[in-house]
Image (cartoon, rainbow, N blue to C red; front, side, top):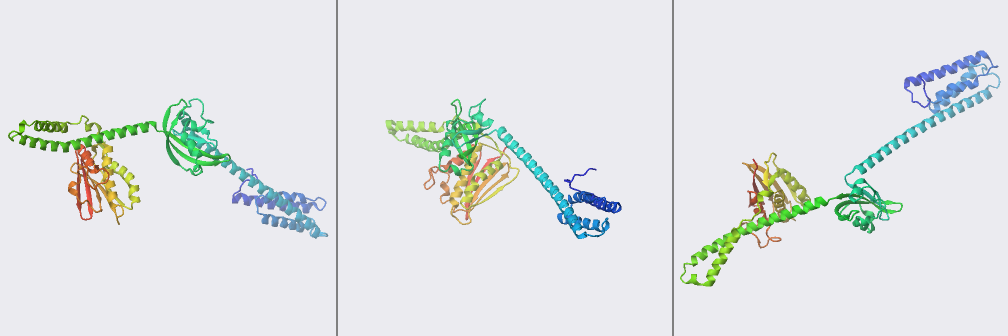
Length: 462
């Protein structure tokens, strides 16, 4: 088997190779002794020494060369005869110099090959990384672009090109202010160099003048020409449209609920006024009064108006909702507020809760209102705690929102509209109970020393 001097040998191969070199040197000494001084073979001793030096450390190579010089002088044709010191010195210098020089060449060659292999491996890894990054950017559904220090688009992937209205050509080289003005303003701002993963929402313009709404994650980096921007751009026009339509739909739905709840209260008052008006008709002479008859007409009209059912049906927006999943969403929303106010949040959501038929947004608004009321009551209190528990009870899903706040002084008027002393308009709990009742459920409040609890009961789906 052929062995290259740059190969790494096993222990057995190294021992065999060194044994062969020793035998070669011994054979040369024997041959030179038999031939005599007339046929010098000193140059041939370098061959086994050079081969051995390729695998031996420097000190071993040096000692081997000295030992070879001594053995040749002792057992060769000279036998330490006249001029032995001079001859031994020249032989030792020649053997050690040649062997060490050859060993250094081999070691340098090995180092060069190692560095070459390492460089090739790093080049392959860098090439693979560049290809992966290029594939990630080019195949990304999000638009990726860079803006140079002159405010021009330096690079843009296919998604960004299509988003800006370039179907066949590329927007590279175009001024970014023409398409996304907010990026140009960001780059010109004094804080541009400190931009890191900054998210902005702004309108943009396509090549044909069409407007779209986008979300951009912007980071700044420095180049030789100045500060540049790296941008990930998303077209969220449809999401914004859906969000606004959903918000309008929820606003109209809640307005209908509030109107229905207020209508219910007015209906009770109008019914009472109707009874009083009817009783007054028995008073002699009063029935002939035109103002009294006009008052009867007004009371009757108010009763009819308050008794009119709203045309939209809540059933149209009800859907099956997983309460556990909705409460996890609530947890993600209110947890930052709890941490900011140093309130301990406790969540106990039982598994296997039945679904409920509700309007998801409406129910989430009720939970948010209850949680925010508790956070407001607990803010600044020591050892504040908010506990939310959900469990099933005989086909009903029960959600309890409890806190260890100061409680509510006027609990008997809790669900009445426009309460004095309430924050904002005083309609939060009134509307919340109205929303829950449209789902066929009920909202209660109980309190005991050290704990105030709101209980939401919703019929489970079968």
